Image (cartoon, rainbow, N blue to C red; front, side, top):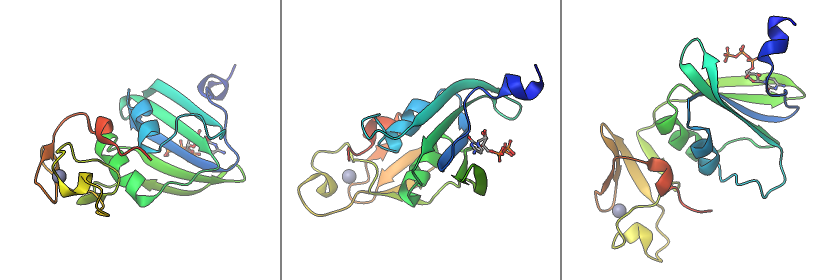
Length: 155
Ligand code: CTP
Ligand code: ZN
């Protein structure tokens, strides 16, 4: 067995997105951010706690047939700051980008404050500024410090 045989633990995809170098243990939260619960029928592979030179341990998520929105990438960067996004077409990586910490995330997280205007029936999109200790609601200033994935808006 060559090294390659040993390392190829998840098969390559034809068309879609590979999110690589995810902080070990965060893959399921990445799926939540992408709104993937398995019901769409698209193929999804997940590898968790794979050995990584750079991160010690990393997770990988491969999604056939999907490209990510900027909002999804922005929230993802908060829980997986070292992640790389690889767009695959016809088995080739045609685009590779590292995620960047955004200054703002819009429309992906829900404010935990039930009296916040963004959580009422108003047509107001949630907006959070990314701050040192978490994300801060632009409307009511509530700060979410921990467990961002628990605050992802249901789609
Ligand atoms: N990949 C895949 N299906 C493909 C092509 C690539 O699943 N058809 C995956 C690879 O397994 C890898 C990631 O996409 O996890 C990036 O591929 P590639 O750029 O070829 O690998 P590396 O050069 O090792 O990436 P990096 O430098 O970002 O670590
Ligand atoms: Zn708020």
